[in-house]
Length: 152
Image 1 (cartoon, rainbow, N blue to C red):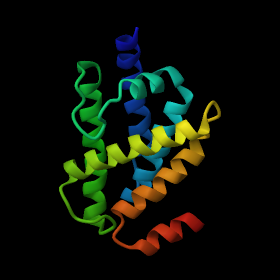
Image 2: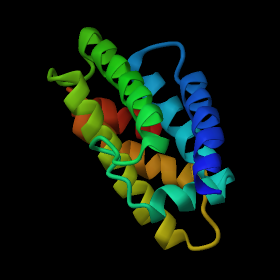
Image 3: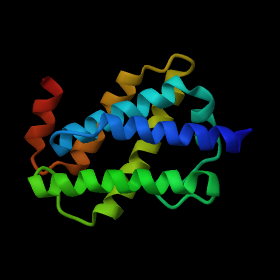
Image 4: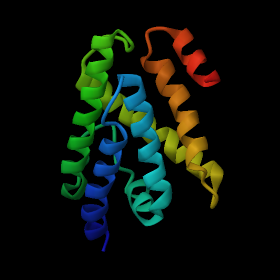
């Protein structure tokens, strides 16, 4: 059953994240995409548990064929957002693909840790907000931008 869930949910997952991060400045895309990412995983507990239980190395190329295509598409999407942010002068310069894999790994660690602490009552907004603080600190050129967005 897991491969079927992964195939169906993986497509829906990518669609949700891409839809959440489709327009606007790069930082908005990153935030909206992350909120869509977390919300989808909170709403689809079986899919979330499969991904976490398999211990997918989201920051590196996953070992299973069931997730490889979706992982690559997701990292490509994140890399495009990061490239846009670099062009806008919002994010630090670097290799967008490698940085996208790093962002994905940070998201995995933050999601897993925050879900573990939340137990049976995960709050998507709380998880997304905490993860965004970490990502802004990692990516943003101007640390004041991170503080300003927290207050807003």
